[in-house]
Length: 175
Image (cartoon, rainbow, N blue to C red; front, top):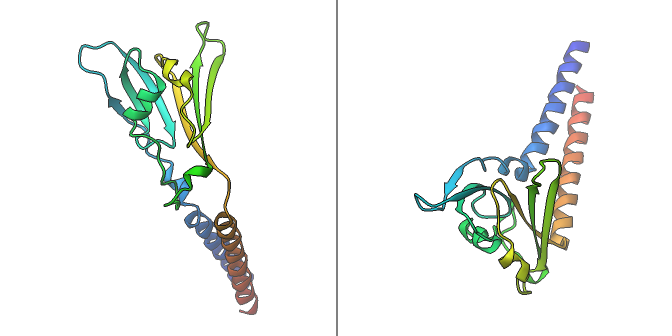
C-alpha cells in the first residue's frame, strides 16, 4: 500500500514538471542558433562575429571587414518582434539594447560597448561608427514594460498549476 502511494506521488511530481515545461515555451525556443552565415563575398577579408538575441537570424556570421553594427543587424534580418507568444508589440514602449563584447588585445578582459535607445528615437550615431572586429559578440535585446496582459498570463499559469496540484493531491489522498 505504501509503495502504491509513493508511485502516485512520483506521478504527481512528474505531471507538475511536465506542466511547467509545457507552459514555458520560451526556454525551448532558445535552442538552434548554432550556424554559420556567410555574408562576405569569396575573396574578401572577413571577420567572424557571433550575433545573439532578438534578431531574426542569430548565429555566427562571416562578414566583410569594416562592417558596422547597423549593417550587421541588417544582415541578420532586423529585430525579431515575435518572441514567445508576443504577436503584437506596442513599439512606442520598446527599448532596444545592443551590446558588443570584445576580448581586449591582451586577452585579459572583455571590453563592452552598449547602445541603448527607444524604438521611435533615431539610432545612436555611434552605432554607424562602431566597426565590428573578429570574434566580437553582438547581443540584441528588445525590452518593453510589462502590460496587464503579461501579469494576467503569469498569474493565470501559476494559479492553474497550483489548482491542478491540489486536485491531484486530493484525488491521490482519497484513493
